[in-house]
Length: 250
Image (cartoon, rainbow, N blue to C red; front, side, top):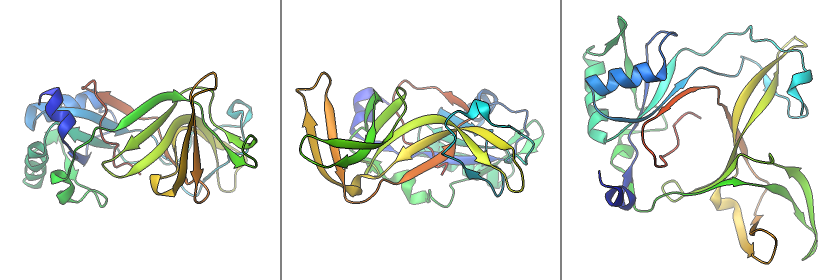
């Protein structure tokens, strides 16, 4: 697809793939699927998960000081694969259904997932997503026109601001090592996580301030921000230079 065609319309072409063993890497899975099915744009092979009955302890800022453990049940190997076209999704689904996809002697399972129904394969968007990389975010209250009380600050670097018209979302994304408290244990599992902050429907007012040393944008929310996270210590293979739709990994 030519770059200008891709900018006019982009289609959700993702599936979940499982059944392979723990020794498989993202590059191995991509190579196999491209040979057997068709072109792959990105593969996120999940190698991390939160321990059962654990919860994130956000009060711990310095994770280097906690007593760590990685002795907990790990997630079954699976991957989120973004194919180049929806035709390859159909081909992969059919091949897996007829037991025609085997990697290192193990049959692969291909699924669209509960949050990715088949109709999304045909759902396009007419605008490319907007991404502002390496922004700095503060959350707080605007008590007067010139006073902003900060209650939470994001990382000093590495935060992206994303606006995606495809699903109508607007969010800040950053990565942070997070301590998870384990049930009946003083130890913590320290896992790198990706965090996403709020949705576009919760924004009431947008103001831009250009007279400051650097451009600042004030977003007034109708309610408190929503914060979602997912584990991020994954094996990721990206084969294209442009931004793609987010994975269906919750």
